[in-house]
Length: 392
Ligand code: TGC
Ligand code: FAD
Image (cartoon, rainbow, N blue to C red; front, side, top):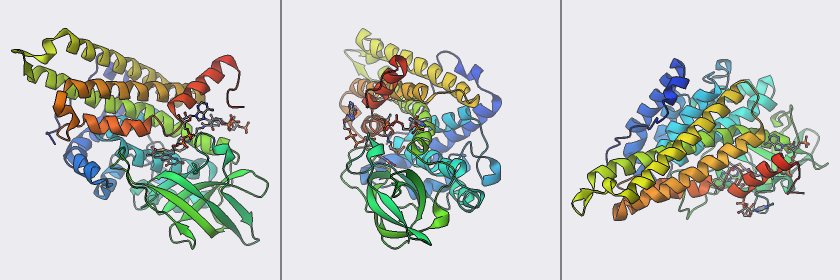
């Protein structure tokens, strides 16, 4: 792969909206990605393997629990710093950002928000340091967009719970020590359970043959009469709103992350357009190529503004789930379109692993599907503006 020469576009001087702490956190993440992710990531994607050696680095830049209080090992940062870390990581690779998103928003967040003090103290510091990795089991083979229909269930056996069922498409599953799993009790109420690797009847087969997010490990979670200690139930929230609340935090991070992938594609195409000569001129001098670049930077700038504003609303605890859906949907769509255009601007070179664009493009096919598909988020916006529910 070519050396990482990334220069971040900031067409509207958005840096002026950031605090010194935001810039410090962002720049540290940016440097780390250049040093420890860019040189290796293409190889790992080609091999379809998660580079476990970057786990310590992710912990060091605050990517595991950026906004979790420091008393539990988190970085204690605000929502904009959290977003900027996700942006920089996904600038490197969406699969690496996935690992961080799942650890922070889907494992640490529910333990912090819905767990008790013993659970917080037992799990959060080890998850923040990367000593333990986590995964989040919501999706099932027959229940993806409609998680409320899940069939994974647990029974109260007196001194423990008995968990049965299966989850599919679970990021980090093949290597996670801890799984936050959503299952129905005998009354059909959804609860979160903390399942640990090594519990009898719990297996995590890896999912192979992915053309997307190849540097992220994906797997199933299978529960065959798994005995769960009673103290592993998350006590402070139940119902579908509990897992969906975690998704709000992860979707917000993805909205920032997608900007990172788009910035990398734009920056690569811009540089290439000045270097590649055809018909005696740099291809960037042709109007058709300029149109592509001008539209890319316009869309990136709009997404940056939308997402920065969402971060301010989140810091004030005022962002709605529907606002988060709009940003996730808009930004991932923006990024996937930019990746396609940028890929074309590189001609044949665009399909090779010499450049990051094709990898971003393939990764974004997962990002546009997970955490609520493009169409599900459109329906959430539709429901919000009309007051009419297309899901019922
Ligand atoms: P509905 O009846 O609308 O809602 C049930 C309850 O949930 C509440 N609620 C929310 N709460 C918090 N945050 C949200 N975003 C919420 N959305 C809804 C709602 O108020 C209600 O509460 P209550 O108290 O009245 O019971 O539920 P529904 O069954 O009609 O479904 C609505 C729908 C379709 C929007 C929802 O199911 C959905 O978002 N589906 C998409 C599923 C999804 O996003 N799955 C993601 C799995 S995890 C993943 O993909 C990780 S990839 C990570 C990575 O690798 O980076
Ligand atoms: P389906 O729900 O079957 O949807 C198929 C199509 O139908 C989509 O286009 C969808 O938009 C459309 N559709 C569905 N319902 C409607 C409707 N009401 N109206 C209009 N169109 C509709 N899940 C986890 O729990 N944890 C994870 O860590 C995790 N990681 C993932 C990693 C990867 C790489 C991938 C690909 C997925 C991951 N997922 C994870 C699962 C992901 O959240 C689901 O794939 C996603 O929610 C969609 O579910 P589905 O694949 O079953 O598609």
